[in-house]
Every structure is written in C-alpha cells, then in structure tokens.
Image (cartoon, rainbow, N blue to C red; front, side, top):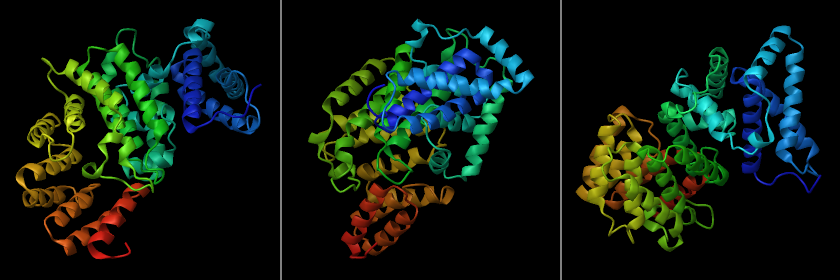
Length: 409
C-alpha cells in the first residue's frame, strides 16, 4: 500500500473507465449494465478504504474488487450465471499484455452503438465514460433528472439485447459521427459547465482531449476527427484568459491574449492546415477554422470578421440551419461586419423560434449596450441572469448590469 487516495476527480474518472472496460472485455458487452453496477460498488468500497492509504496498483485493486462484486450478483441467478460463462468464453480474461492497453475507445464505441438513439448515446457516454452524474447530465440538456435516468436505463437495456454490440476490427469508423458528437458535448460541458461552479471542469476538458487524441491516432485521415481535435486545443488554449482572478467570465474582446497557450494554438493551427487542403469541410473542421482565425489575430479589431462570418454561413448550411447556437454565433460575427442594429434584428427573428435559447439574452444585452440603449440592455441582462447557472457567467452579467444601471443585480 502507498500514500492516500488518488488526487482529483479526473483520476477517479480514469480508474472507473478503465475498470469498466476490463470487465466489459472479460464478461462481454451484453453485461454492460451489471459490469457498471459492479464498478460503482467497488468505487464506494475504494472511497472508504483508501482514505488514508491506497494500493500500489489502484486500477488492479478496483478491477479485482469489481469482478468479485460482479460474481456476487451473477451467482444468485442460474440463467445469469450461464450467460456469464458463455460471455467469458467469448471474451477471454485480461492478459498482462492486454492490461496495458487503453480501452477508453472500447467503452466509447460501445456507448455509441448505432441502434441507440442519439440522446441515449450521449447520456450513456457522459455517465460511463465522462463520469458525470445523472443530475449534471440533466442540467446539460435542461431536462428533468428522471428523463436522463430513463435514457441511460433504456440504452443499457438495449446494449444487453444486442448480443455483441462492439464494431468488428477495422469498422470502428462506422460510429464516428456519434463518437464525435459525444466528445464535442464533453468539451462543451467542460468549458461551459452547467454545474454552477467551478466555471470550468479541467479534468473533463483534459479527458475530452485525451480521448480525441486516441481517436485521431486510430483515424488520422478523418478531417472531422482532426477538426475536432484542433477545435478542442484552440478552445483550451484560451482558458488562462477566459476567467478572471475573482472567478468572473472575461469576454473575448477583453481577454489578455498574452495569456493564451501558444503551444496549443500552434498545434491546433497545424492540424487545421493539414486537414483543410482539398477537404469537404464538416461542422467540426469549420469550427476549428473559425477558432484558428481568432487565435491568429492579435486583437478583436484586426480579426478577419468577414472570413469568420462566411465560415459561419457555410456552417449553417452544412448543419441544415438546425442549430440555433450556431446561428447565434453567426449573428455575433455579423454584428462586427454589418453593424449591431442589423444583428439585433436577427436576434429578434431567432427568438421567435427559440425563445429560451441559452446566451441569447446575454448577446442581445451586450449589443444593446454597445448601441447606447442602456435601459433595454439592463432588462436583457436581468433576463440572462435568471437563465444562467454558471457562477462565472453570472458574475460577468452582474458586472455588466451594475456598470450600465448601478443596480445590485
């Protein structure tokens, strides 16, 4: 035994995912539900026993304990025991060589089975791979917690019904769209956390990048995988300047760009430059191109807003004008090209179809402030505050509100 328990939520997430992958590989993906229950019980025991001293091999301890929990549950049911024996014969025990593998993509691909609805894929991945609680996933999608719990339960039941739901070797790319979508949701939640505080989930951001790097190594010629990795790196590069010393959100036009991580920016831009020649750009590569233009500009005034607006218009076409968040971002760029009043008119149109769109009132308030309509801006800031759970964003909105009206917020 050595030291105390692992430090940081990210390490616990990694241990959980790797232990789950080992059980799934041993007992079969049809028993995903039982494997996850066993790992969760092993985690509870680890939290109790590792308070003062942790094992030399935490993953080995957690996996062995989870296997015992799995056996305890399976032993009481003859049919379940028969399925376990059959699954174990189809999935041989972990060898020392296999134990060194990183099975993150195995669990990710399992959660993204094409027979699952997209809502189930994302919810199950955020729960089993990212380690988010059911309550936090519900916050991400602004739906009741019971709804997310039902999605996860149905997804696990469907996986059990599918027999062997992992893609055969060489066919993992068939699930690429779903995998990319859930990785993107992980990245978005990491940088715009719905948990309230802290303003950013650093562990989740690191995990999203790590998983995307693994996927990029598996599919280096995929422009969308490359684009998503570049987008994540360029987004992460701005984090040191995005949150102020007192936990408030710092908007792009006020950020100290000398704090940006130039190494990540260079890597992200290099990925974009390798992927774009001759590519038929998809949504992630397009967003990476937009992020690269922001990263290359020394300030807001010299940013190539015409190019950014053009890219957003293409992005709207590629996504079938079905993503209101993309449209809102396009309107922000349009304000820099065509003027704030034009952008405000566009926001009114967008609100007609999406009255509760996150950030819409915050963008409207900022534009109203810029065109000299402080009373209307204050009203919009108050509405934005009522719909915002992120503490960093709330601090930012209150600061803006006090600045224009002297109100307490």
